[in-house]
Image (tube, rainbow, N blue to C red; front, side, top):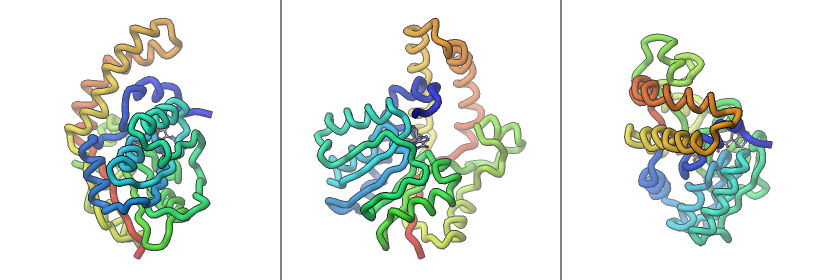
Length: 248
Ligand code: SAH
């Protein structure tokens, strides 16, 4: 079981697989006023940077589930490196339908809301693992500026404009689901650059090391097209944020 191999290639050197910087991730942890020993569940935990650094900085305990074998391995190594392997556990598995045995204080899904079939479904799934008065974290995109055409939306890797909302509408949509938005930390262009531009050097080096690989042509094409596509579209039109929610 694994995610499509292209992501394991392009994001192999990422610690954070979303446009938040390490500083913003720390800001988010501080903003949540996490108590020592708080239990955090992370669906689609990637390389584990959120749980590992929060375990180090705020002394949380955590469980992360991710379908990438590579990222899960990296998460375990990171936990050892930061000396928190006794407080965080990383499970290589499909997180679809995952409900924790023990109720958690914070239930998160950052950049992987397809796990619950979209934002609303993911909130519903996370809520099943959450203690009363616990906090749900949803990380995902919104339109910074409304794309003028469907082609512009597609160039941002949306299937259509209606995939995402503008920030005010997104915040209001959480209310429609009967949740209060109690905090948010938003990515900025610098964070997008760290997430997207970091893939380019990774791709360049991977191509040098794997010229005969089945995916070499695809990666080469991506490396040629991505910088311009990213600068023209994602960087200009797409916002990204983490929203902290509590049930009304
Ligand atoms: N939350 C992490 C990773 C976001 S990238 C971070 O912000 O750094 C999306 C992640 O979802 C990837 O790590 C990918 O491996 C994982 N993923 C994709 N489908 C999944 C599934 N069905 N179950 C669990 N993880 C999944």
